[in-house]
Image (cartoon, rainbow, N blue to C red; front, side):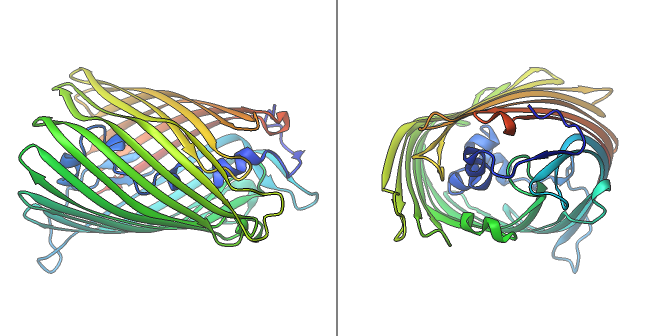
Length: 428
């Protein structure tokens, strides 16, 4: 297991399972799904509210009321952070592969958002940028950018939603890849909803494209798109029974041996407020995945896999200032080395507000187990804690500690890492 000793060199190849997990990931496979699970039963309420201003570990409710040209309200936000990590992989200029280092880092990020609110309708346009500097690297090598737009039109018996974004991300990979991984992600989603008495239906179309800046990762560049359909019945004013179908077509840009994946998914369940103190989203169903070989795929054949999938999340207000949250997700995702990547993910967290709700403390623990059909397993355990102090409604300070351990079928790829960070953030 990698212990974080500075200067230890590691071979580049590593585990193909981790490459598939990092490059394709659950986000690409779920790009076209509805967001009930992520909002934990509050999707409709969230659409009527402004998106929180997020910078690092800080989140602020927009407070500025001034209207630019009498039409739109500008909001500014940002954060400065400093931290330390004891197991960072960096490119080794003197020898093949990468090496482990202990390193301190600083991060700065800032953003501007324009909000236009017309009765129940909302438009948001946002730009943010950030840079992380690892002290021993001696170069600003993690420039990041995000451009995002959101539109919500809400009427009595119908509504519409659209969002689009471009993101440049840069992060130090933990396994297999050299140095900093830079990726450009383009995404767009749109859906319409109609309601009649207790019944309702949504129809959506979404797409996503991922491009890598490093030539060695070009075979992983891909695009994913497809429609979704959801019908629901209101059991109570704030609780729905839902049934939905999602389809995704994922295709690689440069791989000749593997053309891509077709993924079908059907799920049903409930979503909303179970009691005044308990909200939940429960979806159970099945997924079918078909892999298509490319024109030059010698030894590669079309493959199929079907299995059980689930998304369960809940939030419980145990006491007026104490909140407990939990989630479980079972997903079937694309894998470059197998018929499928089957993952089970569990996370639990507790949040406590203190001192007239100016201080919020949170602790969490999570576990992910992934496997491909060749018997390769990957286990990742993570835990951490954070505390934030809201000095003013627009200013806060905070500290974060995170620990992660990964074990797999290749002992040379196993690692554990501790990270500590302090930050100050502001948002108006």
